[in-house]
Length: 283
Image 1 (cartoon, one colour):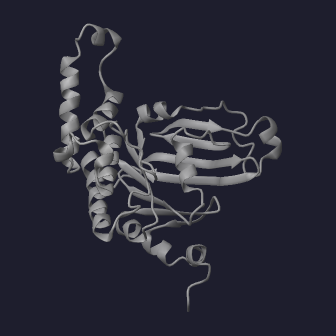
Image 2 (cartoon, one colour):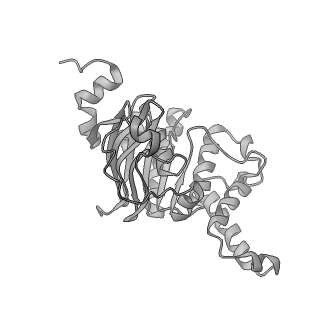
Image 3 (cartoon, helix red, strand yellow):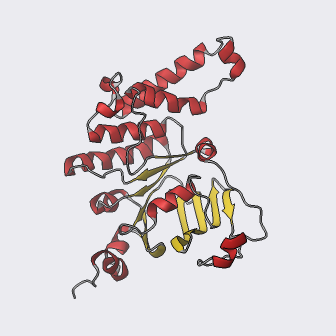
């Protein structure tokens, strides 16, 4: 499998006032791999996702996507004086780059959320179709003169294909929020895939699922990686899912990396065990 990195985070720090939520995070997501970012509650995992996707501008650090710098920042002004992280001067002589979330999506990064965020008044079909418009090959003139009928037909056809792949075609006319919880999770993934990403970020995709649903989710994530040829970075507390499908695992605690490695290496790491259980493994 290729070791070309789809995503590379370097020295990413996110400070809110006097609180350092993420501290000097460096992480690679290789092409075609499923990588997990795990850690106890409050470790900074979702904050890291928000730094990648443009929701937050990191206080310091650099994010590279597909070999090009996508995000870069360093502490300035009052924050420069009050900065509590590390490597504060590393990027000081480089221009800041601060993309908006929609620009990050257009580059090829899509995400789901810890708390499901579907468009509540829209149908299942409409939720995915709207996302398809991110890649629409049309402009204001084609819309005015109704010259985009073929493009609209293409998007509707591809929307149905995505719904079929996620087992949702029979619910296409249902209001999105009327679906059972597990199917809403599938719909959110389908909507993310509609933007044609090169990297998919999943924030606690198994949250609230029973063991059977989690097993189906594991199969679905692996299928998505293989079928769409994309890399996946996920946050998850269900260790059976993480250990079952992830090639690489990065563990955060209090915003700092405490371990990186394979499933076996992480399972047997005493620092990780202590972070989760508060005590060292019995001898």
